[in-house]
Each structure stands twice: as C-alpha cells, then as structure tokens.
Length: 478
Image 1: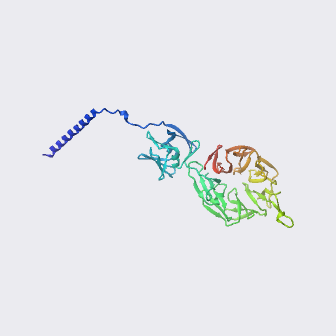
Image 2: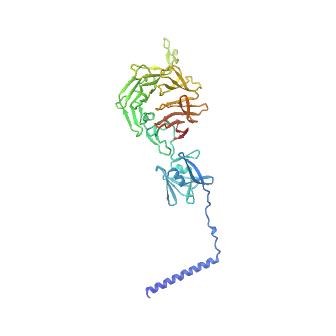
Image 3: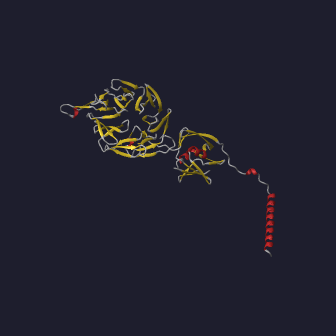
C-alpha cells in the first residue's frame, strides 16, 4: 500500500474517532442538567475610600479599604507619597525606599513580608482588589525606614532618637547636634528638610562642645590638654591651631573669623586671643584677677565683657582653729566687667555690684549689654533679663514677666529670649524696642537656641531638636 493512501486512511479514522467522542460527551451532557453560571465564586469587594496623610508636612491622598476594622492603603499610592521605588515580581510587589537602604517584598493574602532578607509580619494580610494591593500602614512604613507620628503624620525617614544638645548651623544650613546619651558624645549632621538621612559627623568629644565661627564654616574646641582645634563644618576635618597647651575656656570668635578670644590659665586669670593663620597668642588682659568666665566680644572687636566670679572669704581667729573658721559670702557672686581694647592703657570697668546671680551676658548692637539676673537665695521668683548701659550707670529690667533662662544676640543684632511662663510652658520670643514677639511655645523647657546664616531657628526642647518656623515647631528628633 502506498504511503499516501495509508495516510488518508489514518486521517479519516481520527476524524471518526473525534466525532464519536464528541457525540458520547454530548449524550452524557444531555443526561445531566446544566449548572447555572452564577455558581462561580467571587471574592467580596471592599469599599475604596480616599484617606489623607501628611508626609513630611505635605498633604497626600491615598486610596484605602477597611478590613475587619483595620485600614489598608494602596501600596502604589503609598510608594508614590514616600518617593519609594515599586516593581512587580510575579505575584509579589517589591519596594525600595527613597535612598535604597531597604528592600521589601509583599504578597497578597500573605501575612509575612520580607524586609532586607528577614521575615516580618502584618496583623492583617495584604488584599488584592481591582489590580491594587492594599497594605497596613505601620508595618510597611517601618519596613521602608519611615515613621508614623500622631495626628496622621508620616516622616519618610525615621528620626534620630535620644537626648541632644549644642545645636549649630553650618554654612549650608545643615544642623549639627550632639547626642549626649550614648557611650560617647557624637555629633550628628541633620538636614533640616524632613525625609533626608542623618549621619554621624564627628565622634571627637571636644567637637561636641565646639563654638561656631561667624561665617558658619568652622567650629573650635580644646582637648583635655588645652590644645586648640578647629574643624571644618562641611567635611568634619580637624586641624590643630598652634601648639600652646595652657588652659583655655570660653572660646569666642572675632567678627571676622580670624581670631579666637579665650580665658586663659589654671585659675582663669587672663584673657588672650590666638590668630588662626599663625597660631600666635596675644594677651589682652593679665590683671591676675581669678575666676573670669562668660567672655563676650563686640562685633567690631573693640570691647570685651566678662564675669568675675567672687567666692566667699575665709575668716579665722588668731589660733587658726578649725572651729573658728567661717566663710563670709557678703561679697560673693558674679560681677560684670568690660574692657576697651582700643584705648591705650585702658583698665577693666566694673559694671555691676549687686549680689544677684548673673548669667549669659551678650552685647547689643549699641554696645550695651544684657544678662540674666537670678535670685541668689533661690526663692521662687522669676529670673529677669536685665540690660545695662555701656558705662554701667543705668540698669533696666528688660524682661521680667516670665522666668528667663536663655538669651542670645544674633550676628544681625536680634535679641532672642527663652523662659518659662506662669502656666509652666516655655516661650521663645524676640525682643525689639521693648516689645516681645513670640516665635514658639512649648510645654517642655527650651534650653538652647541656634540661628543659621539665613535666619532659620532651631531650639533644644526637652532634649529634642526642634525647627521653628511661622510660630510652629517641627521635631527633627524624638
């Protein structure tokens, strides 16, 4: 038999077999009632709502559903709001945070999520509906290194946590703060725009107490041996200045940033300055009066002011017995002095004589001074901000209606004052022409204030770093 004939017979046989099979199936189908199409099972759909979030201070609207009392958010909308990357991988969705620190894999109807290779859990499994995966907010934010705060707020990056101090701004407006509750003090650099990474900037313990130059480019500090250092606030690079190792306290920059004034000596008996480019030290005052502190310099470098802290005087009888020893505190306390640096042969001028405790002197633009005056007996009365004329002849209570605990005069001559009000809250305000303008109020104490070159204000309140703008505070740390 020829191949073509055999092939034709096989094809015909196959056609017949197929027809029989179809007929048999059809007959069987005729004997059973058809199932209604409506028996196909479909998952119940959840109502989609629009839900608002505040992300780094900006309002965002996300699609959401509610599952057993828990709100789940569209993972795509959430990724958009956080600036996170999103891609599909088979049935899973893969997220990457804005800076590429975290990799997160989420699957619908699976409670487990993979975070940087480790397994974590949702309370409610993600849901897939109409092509969108909906997820719990808290675990997703945590996985991406973000943070949820009260009132529906979200930060794209978790804030630093701890107790902070010594805020200073660098030239670019970044904020340097010292975390003081770790094993060693560490200086962190914080971008004041939310959603940006913070970094350990310097772990030198001296840098934690640095004073910033007028141009915000350098910080200055001494080590335990009295060696002076300056460090670049942009790079963190530290350089020694000179080789002198005498005791130096109360470092104060000249207005041009070329010199550093300081109180010198084991007994704080001298005032000197060091020229940065040469390392040469020049004595300004060596009157042998001990216990000087709180050195201040005018913007024109023509005058300095400082406190002399007078201690009690020991008195004894002729036999010098221990029982007869007494301490006379009549003249004890801090007294404010000024010294003209221009007039030849000028001597220090005592500006105050009262027995009140005196703190934080600052020069105003007209050459007068302000300082905080506190009750020496510790009675429950307000500390007052006083102003004193250039020659010390007139003293005025500038702020007396709150308990003042901090004052600062900016390079531009603005006077900022912080204190505690009668209701226990703290207030930061600017004083100009005898008028107070509130800048910020907090239920926690305001202990330090820093001002940037362009006028941004940061405070330390309750150990947290707070940016102040428009009467409101944004907590950069927690």
